[in-house]
Structures are given as C-alpha cells and as structure tokens.
Image (tube, rainbow, N blue to C red; front, side, top):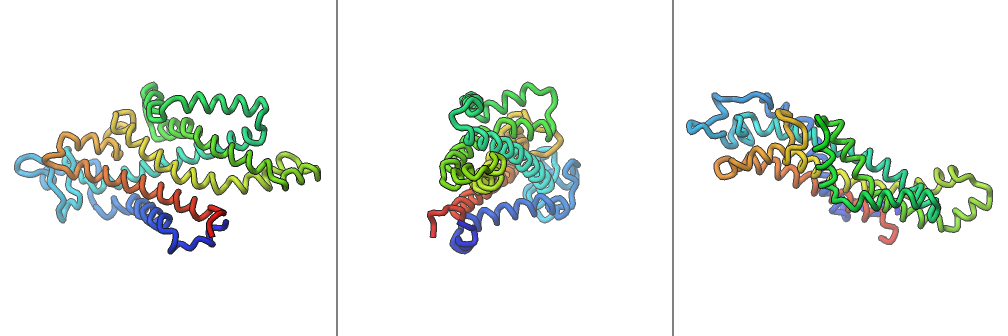
Length: 283
C-alpha cells in the first residue's frame, strides 16, 4: 500500500518519530553555533562554582558545564553529530549487506548458496550483538569513526538478511514470477523489476529501526571505553563522565541520557510508522 493511503495525521507514530529525528538533526547542525562556546575549552572563570563544582544550567551555560567545566550544550550537539554519522553510516553498510545476502539466499532457497549464507547468519546471531561489537572494538589498536561504523555495520546485517530472505522467498513463489520465467525473463531482470522494488519497503523499515540500534550500540561502546577517545564528545562517554557527579551535578548525565533516549525513540517510532504506512492489510 502506498504511504499516501495512510494519512500522516492518523499515523501518529510516524509523525512523532519524524519530529524527534528532525529535532535531533537540527540540534546537531545548529547546537554548537547557538551555544557560542568552544566544546573543548574549559571555562574556569565562569564554568566553576566557588566550591569548585561544575555550574548548573544558566543563561550563560544553558545545560551547565561538565566535570572539566566545558559547555555541556555544545558537547552534546557534537555528540549528536557523531551519533548520527556513525548510526546512519553503519546502518547503510548493514542494510546494503543484509539486503544483498537476504535476496540471494531467498532467491536460491534450498541451494548451496542459501545454505552457506544462512549458516554464516546463524553463527553470527549466536553471539549477542553488543558483546560481539565490544569484543571486536577491544581487539582494535585505535578506534576512529570509520572503524566503529564498519564494526557496527559488518556485524549488524544478520537480522536484516533473515527478514529480507523471508520476504524474497514469499515474492519468488508468486504467479507473476513464474510467468516471467516462462516468458524467458532473466534472473537479474526478475530481481531488478519485481523482487528489489517489493523488498524495498521492508528494508526501509528495518533500516529505520537499525539506526536506533546503532546509536545505542555506539553509546554503549563509548560508555565502556571502546568508542572514540577523549576529548571527542560522545554521548556514551558523557554519561560515563557524569556518573561520579550525579548527586552534585546531575545534568552531566541527564543531558546525554535523555538525548540517547529521544534519538532511539524517534527512529523506532519512525520505523513503526513506516511499517503501518506500508502495511497492505490496512485500509
């Protein structure tokens, strides 16, 4: 069913999810400029109280300062850029790889290629996702945005491959595929004209939810010390830095925690909204 048949005003999950995602994008772009503070510079004159604690939210520092007396707002915005870049890039890698494997395995169901690909997927899914990426990240000498997004992307395609395989098998069994074969249509022609357009919807839904998973995974890596090295701001490391100051400066942890929650919620709601909009069983 086309998305147009599910009005946006009725599909509140898509509306809320899209709004949260757009707010996150705008904040990532404009946040450092609105703040006007250097996210890497400590302000010992204005960012520290007389008791040598970080100052709380004020007209000068809208979200207060962190434990090194740096502006929390500007660092949160730069962390949003990092999370969005890694989340979207890793999702692109995982979606492309998972979609390719799923289509090939589903089209050649029951053959050697399907068996080999699905055994690889089964072995990968036997390991918890977060545990797997932490083990890979720990084995790297130096972590960069590129290595993190590749680690997430090359381990996050397994579930996508299973979903797309099932959808491809469903499409492959339809009458128009049989008719196309009878008329001499090539395998590539059938895949290009019939299979790929029909798996694009489920792939988009999975990708939307996958962005949330990638952002959360990157935050977990940073919190545990496997992400980008300081002073690069990341939401996970900001959470880590604030845990010892929660009683005296709770904003240090609350700001990145709420940002992670909002971004994960936004992309998940967007994925659910797309699922409802593309569901052919809905009027």
